[in-house]
Length: 189
Image (tube, rainbow, N blue to C red):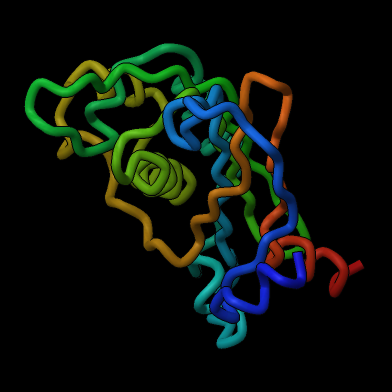
């Protein structure tokens, strides 16, 4: 790996490498992708976290967010939560959607067989609306049924989103907790 790092930009590093078949595609061979979204949920902004976590000053109701998120798990048409080309498939299988508070941050983990463009950020924006009381979690089935992006909440800022891992058929899973969540957890324990 050191030889590879000598030719890569400073903001890119390689932690693992494997030989794969000639027909392997990093995108199309994947079985599951996992994204993690970090929210700094406290009254004051943090200058140190501004680039790494979305700030929400109003205290979020995690129960409401979990209730809303549970209704998204399964095979669904997620057109209301992402952008697609006209006629493109929008059905995805969301296998996991977890909302937890961890060391001063709210951590949302979403794992699916694939995601639409901006899908995780739209889900997070909708969950935040539920967490602030601006939207009732019982609205999720109607949002899904609408098949219209305007039915769901806003697209959350990109600053809190991390592609945390990709799982492939051979059992390889590249999941790694985003560094901001590891560092924050150590700092507060």
